[in-house]
Length: 77
View 1 (cartoon, rainbow, N blue to C red):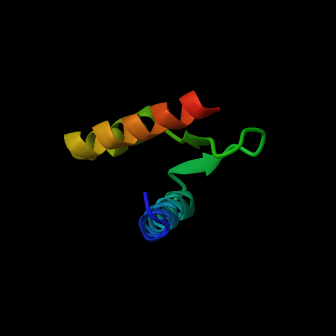
View 2 (tube, rainbow, N blue to C red; view 1 turned 90 degrees about the horizontal axis):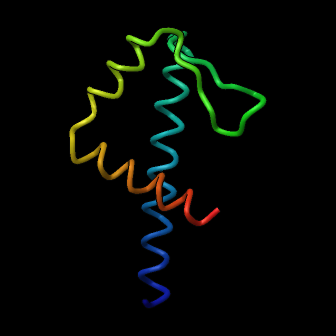
C-alpha cells in the first residue's frame, strides 16, 4: 500500500476517533454515562435502558463494522 493510501486511512481513522470522542462527550454532558477513570476508555451507562437504546439505535451494518473493529483491536493487543 502506498504512503498516500496510508495517510488517507490515518486521516479517516483520526476523523472517526474525533467523532466518537465528540459523541462520548455529549453523552457525558447529558449525564447518560460516565467515564470510568480506573479503566482506559471505559464508560458506564447510568441505566441499562439507555445503553440498550444507544446500541439498538445503530444501524445493523454500523454495529457489524464497530464489532469488527473492536475484535481486530483486541486481537492486536
